[in-house]
Image (cartoon, rainbow, N blue to C red):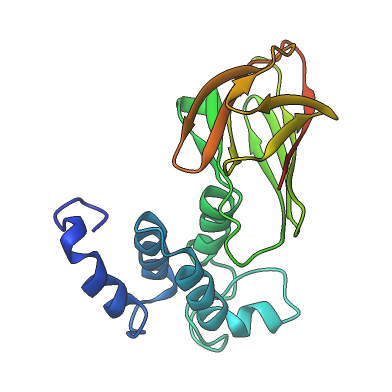
Length: 209
């Protein structure tokens, strides 16, 4: 699926396989989670992650094990940290578009999650996001580094109002001009904005249901 050899017509059978088979090592588990997320099976990826890494999560230990049992292999293995990439890349939605995060997206996938806080270090500076989903609104607090271009995807449904720092900037399919924020597009349940601040800047978006 990741290489592109399997088309979308095979996604159902691949998803069934990846949610019922548990043979991957911690290293290869990353690619299982990556495939599930690319097929937009975010809840399945989250459930599998919590199941597979349950012992690591519960252990009062500052590093990750090489293999699934702490007694096997070494106890400090970076390759076991795949879920950290998956959570920042897909759940928080912070992904580079250009090298060195010169441009990046913030495209949250909340699904069953109600709160996400994530910090991604880059050569441009720290990218910080807090995402909250309530019955009344989706809220994104984002800090964008200096001279980095961010594409911000705000979940949106017809009839909602989007505020930026308490000011309405999108309503009834119309964008109200705002300093440092440009309207890009309305696509696939999102309104997309962009910004390239000349100094580190924080933004608070609210999509009010």
